[in-house]
Image (cartoon, rainbow, N blue to C red):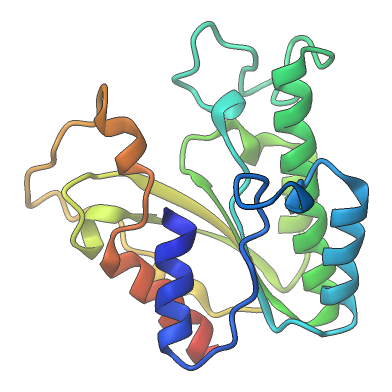
Length: 203
């Protein structure tokens, strides 16, 4: 749903938007498949796309996961052969790889994860941050009109991303994220979707 909102907003700004590469939309869009990663790499490296938005699933990297299968000092997981850990790591590495491709192909890219995600502790994430055209910014959904405080961390390349760096002003109330509200809080509110689309347009 978050991807669809972002895609619609981007399309409204007269961009040609490609498909959402996610297995829930098509079995051919499985990012576990090396052929899909190679195809995406080809598009980026040969400048067939100007920008990519990457949103790897973060369940195994979540600090709220119980029982925990990772900790901040062991972001790859206690048991890397566990199916859910292996899949989570594989998808995270695929997205980090594509951001690396974008960084060296002068394409814009952003990778989103919750601010407290353990994904940002991966060595690969830190190595990308060492590149001169890669940076990390944070934002809170409530600063863009959401009823939730939900905070996001963005790893971005070839973009002037400070316009989306808006922490909570602490001058308003939030709806507590729990139970059935957890999934909905992870969806970009309209204000944040618009801000991300405008960022890509202005860079």
